[in-house]
Length: 279
Image 1 (tube, rainbow, N blue to C red):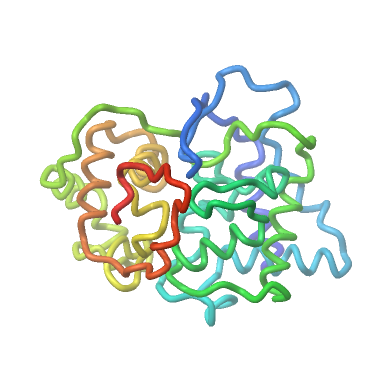
Image 2 (image 1 turned 90 degrees about the vertical axis):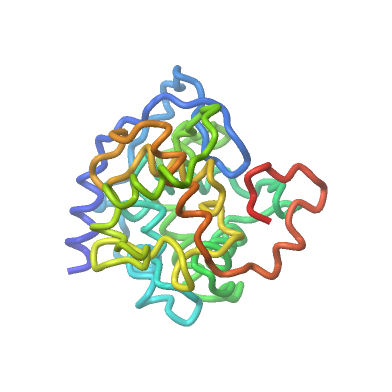
């Protein structure tokens, strides 16, 4: 059954063509050049290329960790989210922090951490921040599995090349966030999936409160959340809200209470913290 689900997910996105992008921040809510290199196409591998050996088992487990994090990674998760709530379609959506090609970018220097980070380090950041949980041990089978899944999705990308669909298409605007209007937009377009109290439903995750991402998550920044909302929300109807409404909704959501992140005191040790970081 898991194989059938994985096949359906991949085939549903394999022909996606990413929108044009412009350079953005280190949090990767960015778009790059409108002229993509000829070999930098969004072409996830076919599920048929998953090997029938131990590596294949790792890839399949990695998929489950991404899609069903609450079940497969429960001991490391501190809220009600799954990885795929941000990395939509199991990391296959080019408008929602896709995993395709990402492994080719690591190790890389991250300003927020002030050091070089491996792909495993970056995954653990998500567990600690977006999932409000704790890092997986370096020798964890489940951490190795997520890395294997992302590496498999990245296998068609040539080395040393930009990944033009990296992150989220960046929304650029001088509009001043208005959480009052954001509440109106939320009540009109978001409550069906996220609930009137923002605590989620069977169709959408909590967007604030103790069961949502903490203040150390990238999504806690209004600019990142607004970009995500613009490109992907309401689910299946991305690009239908106005820029202003996306920004205002992000402001409303991110002015609601959410868990703290104690290790935030170590972020941006060399400076350069973005203005909309909420701490």
